[in-house]
Length: 264
Image (cartoon, rainbow, N blue to C red; front, side):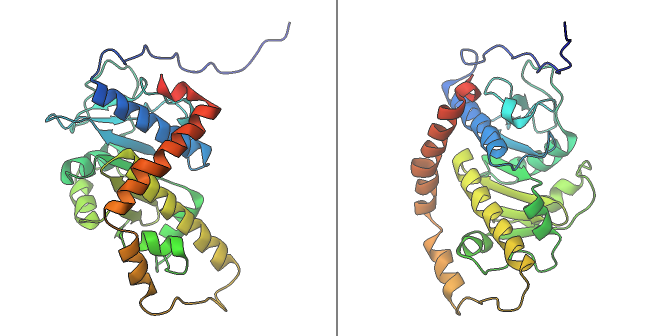
């Protein structure tokens, strides 16, 4: 009889649904959904990027992925709860990515409105992050994302605690950041908002690489004032409503049709 060489998946953790508040459980479901969606859209990088969400309450705890699971395996109960110093405060044996802790703890602590933080290493995002000019305003999607983009210079793999101060300073009051020579990052008052911002940013980066691969000759520069008009059209409460009320419920339905196990 043939012996299977398939590596078994990590054992499913017991459900935490009845051991955490309803508010935390809903947050866990949303964050697990974001991990699955990142995998679905091909934005994951094996186990090496990270998404997080702050748990409501005065403790400044936040949820992040266990550093031994692929994104398509993440469930609401498998997410690890840690404090601002990187200590695990939930009953989980799973390790946590050190760079993930440094980046996410910095922004959760430094920005009260940063309830969710998403960080990716996609090829298109990395390519734009390596360009001196950054994100170009040549597409509608780039104009939606571009007015809110900050930049942070590469300092090596983000394992040093003193980088946190510079990350927060460079982000300022913006919600989207290109980490030079590294990748992309978004924040939001909800997982839904951070995910929609990431969707626009990643689509803009992808379009830019496709556009520039055809050469710079003949690029159409938008008319003066158009980028500012798009900024006005894509900011404010309407964007939050679009994320939470329209796009996110549709994305959850998409996941539920494919595999609803992220809710476990």
